Amino acid sequence: MNDEQKLEELKKKVMKVILSKEALERLGRIKLVKPELAAQLELYLVQLYQSGKIKGLITEEQIKMILETLSSRKEFKIIR
Image 1 (cartoon, rainbow, N blue to C red):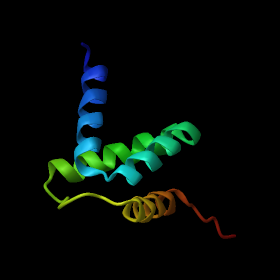
Image 2 (image 1 turned 60 degrees about the vertical axis):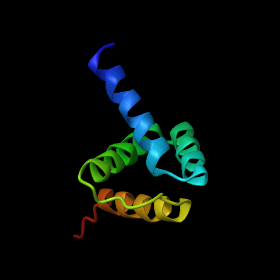
Image 3 (image 1 turned 180 degrees about the vertical axis):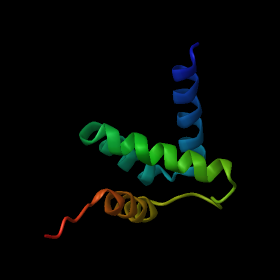
């Protein structure tokens, strides 16, 4: 197994541990529509998990809130 496959396996395991069933389903739907955003979300969640900042299961509502913050980081406003 190469490093990329190991990382994917790690992400899958972590997602099953920290996400509720509904949140896991939402992540799956996001992967279909916006794979880049899903990858960014997974990486963010893995980092939170590894740093011990996740207590209990993450719900679908919490996923929505995290997505809003990740999306707002990408918005750039150019004012002239």
